[in-house]
Length: 147
Length: 147
Image (cartoon, rainbow over the protein chains, first blue to last red):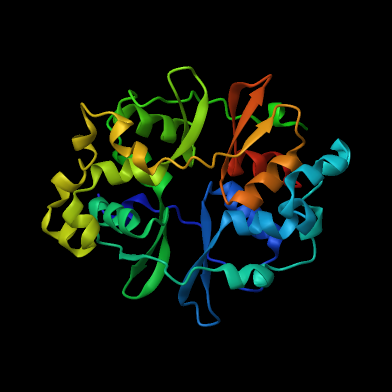
């Protein structure tokens, strides 16, 4: 198996991607983060899922989670509503520029070694310098675990 | 919605859990980590998925991922084999003791605020002090994202 065989082919995002769309992509692809590309389509980092959540949760609740108890259940259920109309640009200062990158021909052990070394559960996969997808730790384990 | 309504009810592990079983639980439940309990069943931390991977990947490959290229593809595909016969005890020194804990009656906003504050994509859920499961960032987003 090569990196190209274990791709979770979710689309990259840009700073213009709506925050709610980023949340949907994270869910749909069960991704721990999304790859951010610049205006030329070059990958330059990873946006961890937790930072999309942080865009939505009010600052005072993040400072003291017990304060979230004053919000009643019906309103709490809609805590993602503040994402509407916003883009991920606000979260870009949290983007890690240490995105590990593997060639599409890399073996699964090479990909695993990259994850183990960097601590990133997401590796960008390129072919001839072009981004073709990503491998997540979940996708990797799913494929290599003995049945 | 309350924490009890968004549970990913995967079983906790102990230091005696076989490493390969931990890998299977991570896959099966698409979990970013597993909750570790002590001999009295009390949760005391979270084992991140990446540390299970680190048990399997040879040290020299973690130090220099390019060295993984010398392992041919058929052998690379079986890089989890070294987990056989071992337990997660070896990885326990990496267990974070900062496991966030929510009551089963906590709202989803309280759970989200705990994740946002601690950076943990996994929150242990207790009822009357007893562990009843966990909420992952994925499970949480899945349930609250507007359709």
